[in-house]
Image (tube, rainbow, N blue to C red; front, top):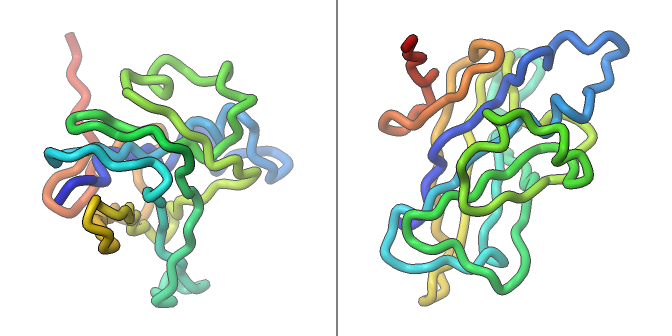
Amino acid sequence: MSLQVYMAKPNPAGKDKTGAGVPKPEQLVAEWVDVKNVGSESIRFSTIALHHTLYGARCESTDKTECYWQGNGDETLKPGEVLRVHTGKREHRDLLSGEDDGNVSWRAFAGRGNFVLNNRCGDRIYVTWRNHAGPQLQDDASYDPNPPEGAILKRAGNKLVPAPVYAW
């Protein structure tokens, strides 16, 4: 395996409480997924894509996924580097909190005007890529319904779970 869905923040503070039902730009850039290169080879951005599962009205799986971000360019994600993909638009980068800005190697924006990740049903996030030999590769991790508001979920096995918060 080379790439891994490493962390995510699917339920930014206030996500479900927008007065007019329209997400605010600072909320959209606060929904994100981190992908980490855990392998020994660099992966070209143009081969990387993020997907998530689509659910029906009663949270039943539709057996369909949606690609909500596709990489481009000749740059590469080197071993050990982390790519953070924000749901919102690049022009709202200045609205990132310190926590959402984070210490990541690369940053991308899906450019969406609505939230992508599912809170009510939980979700499964997929990263796909091609290695130097050409076959399509994939990693995925899921999280449970109704993740805590504002929580950063970190990978544990094939699940994304709330990261412990330490008081100093």
